[in-house]
Length: 63
Image 1 (cartoon, rainbow, N blue to C red):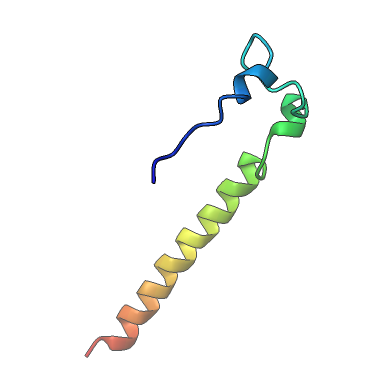
Image 2 (cartoon, rainbow, N blue to C red):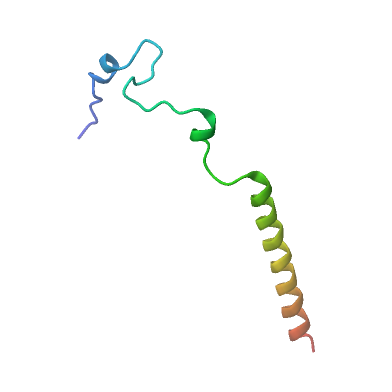
């Protein structure tokens, strides 16, 4: 079975290629995720936590 694209899609779009029925959002509304500062903090805490866990595992298994 072959895929047949919908030929009517281009008739519903405006001249610039955007769908006129699509919601318009400003950059703040369109941005997703968390602020970069908070993400860096979580990443740093996670890396330090893993390093500490490896050190504890190393010390616990030393002969």
